[in-house]
Image (cartoon, rainbow, N blue to C red; front, side, top):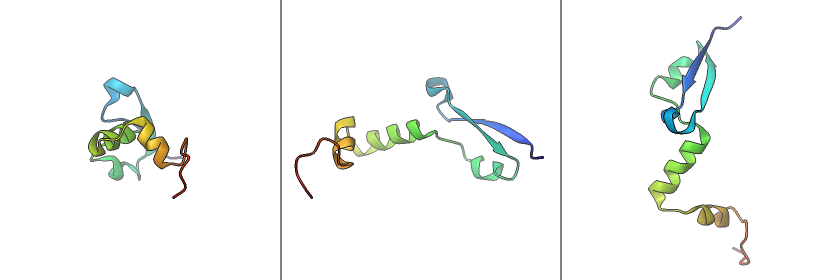
Length: 66
């Protein structure tokens, strides 16, 4: 049986996301943990993208073929 630890997202106060990890995985989370939504938001802020730009680059709502 593995012991599990609850690791909160670095922005837990905003998103409220946390994940359970085993003791052996804990070393990977020592620098912190970002949930997928917060990671996406940081990338959009860093690159200056808006939600529509991200969807367009993923192929949603585009008429042009690349």
